[in-house]
Image 1 (cartoon, rainbow, N blue to C red):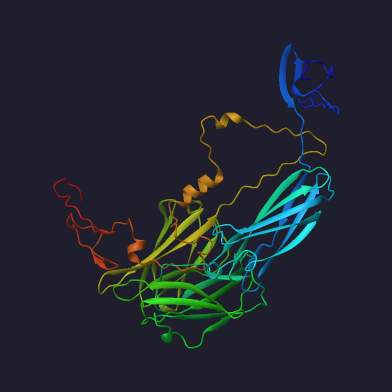
Image 2 (cartoon, rainbow, N blue to C red):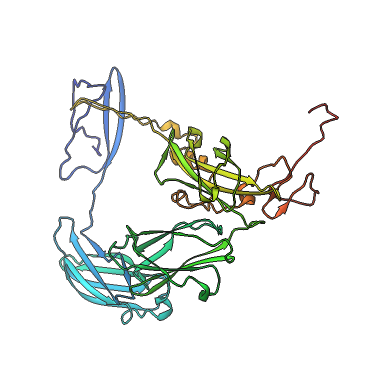
Length: 481
């Protein structure tokens, strides 16, 4: 023990699977300090020390229970429940002091003294008690901090507890999940709207509907006359919009929750740039998850008839699939093709498609990110009931200080392909909004073509720079063809 006195001794112990386990019950008043275990086997001694200290537990705990959020548009008070119980579960009787204040702006402070017998519920008025002013009521959210202090009437001991609740000016929040940078006139624009309460829970399917208003001009008077009335399912609304080919330069989407009449600015998206006003779009034919070795179908749609479409798949920094597709049908109605995913496409790959307009050599392109899940090898570990299992942890692997986890590997692989601004989780319903300059960034063309707005000829002057350059070399002197 801590005084060096032998407390117990076991002799002639036999190991089972190389392990010996024994127990020692400490007395109610043991000797505090460093205790030592000495083991002797095969002429060798091994010691291990542990510390015995007096563990003084808190007499009681104070807990402040608050709602997940409060919406000041429908409620003006917060019910706070204060719970005080000792370590044995018995209620604590005594004095309770509750302080409430706005955590950030400190516009007001509320203080109340009362008694408590295990549990006490106090209602705090947001406007009358802590004086929330109108500018804060119009903000996105305010932290309201509740601090409870309980003094036990028997022991005189005092303990504190605190919690915060967010106060919003509305109880429901709507936002556009997929936010492409641009839209392509003449092609489908899929909008996914998330409608949830302020604590992230989906609204009820039979709840209020969302009125969707949209247009292609800054002037709201020129918008669509009849707005769409949509009902969320599991908190999500999916709607397909078809911007006209001869529309304006911007698309604005606004939502209005019919009850209690809240407005949401969902998206303001600019028109994609194109020299000829023609666009290409590539989307997935379904929304199922993709695994290695699966046949994945895509649909390509263009705003003009074409005869050939070139598609490549980039995975882990390399081109892992490429094909030139002959288009025998009208691609304006959609052209379907498929690929078989490989290991090189996991965890994320990028589908790039383009065609070249014959009249002005303009490259019209689109890109789509796809998430491909790796197929893990199943491993089953079985043992007999009551058998001893040994677990070994080797600390020497951490000596170099270079720890690599699965997330590090996955993020490194994604860095070869993924655009940080793209949404991986909704890539199958978020058609690529990229144009040729963005799709072909870092690619060297072997002919004179128009990419986006710039005509790049070979060789360009040293003072010019572009995303894509046409490069040619005179190899006659070196004898290379």
